[in-house]
Length: 379
Image (cartoon, rainbow, N blue to C red; front, side, top):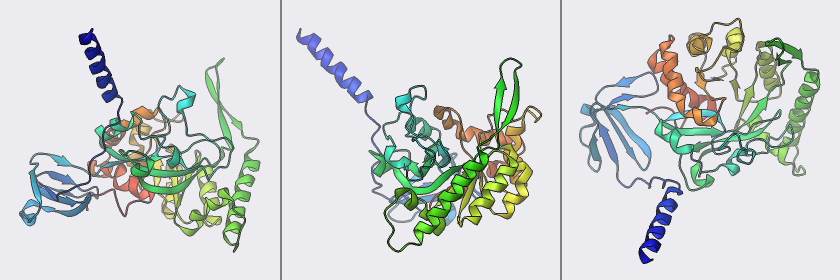
């Protein structure tokens, strides 16, 4: 009987251990210097036989091993033969907001209502998510946690892939507001003929008018000396001051132009565009307005039946050659977003330079999120 109780107790301890979130890394106690690796800086530059030092979690040195020598106080680790990259960055995900997508109670990214800029993803972020360790395993160290649904789903934050709670895990708080620009037409699939048709959106003008009223009201609210507290209006103020970005989700070429023109006319300072193949048709317009573009993964099907089957694979290369800043997001099951580095790898196989492809998941992603002063490159 005693033996049985002991076995039961030990089993309970084992299962309790499995249920725990991996312990976050302790604060760095000793300066460390990694020597001998090939360093890919994320800027397009490569340093053979490199030396990268960091102290208290921040990079303090990037040079060749010969230039670095053996500085006093550093723990020197020989990593000859290894490759060092910046941590990968995943924009526009529902990390921490969803776990099992087929279970409604585990999808905490869609608030009721259509215009909710005051909805903050960060306070719903779940650090116990079992998806987070799979991101880290593939090199994704930062991810944007983004609300979805409606015309203005809310405000996103960039999260680190570890932490006891959201306060520990947050890297960049409330970086921007997301805007789903209304579609002028909606795709419809006919199961009788197995064809796709487009039906005009009869509410398009009304939806755009609603957005214009909201932005206009928010601008007026910011000019009041003592306004009556309105959380939706307050959540918009960073767009006009330049402290936050407006992430525009738009599908068609004419919608892209209208959405960007609308935002600029409303006084928005910083804009990032999330779109797909249609960006090719208005690439010059996007370039002139100096707007970063975040596109779906290369592991996708073409948006239209008359497009080449490999268009998603070559899209990053085509947009980069057009002079645009390109990054990737993931628009399918969250668990597959861990394949972010392989999206970039596929782009290399379809005409993109390897170091340029690395930028799409490091430096360019940081620029698109407005956090490139702190992360994205080894500098």
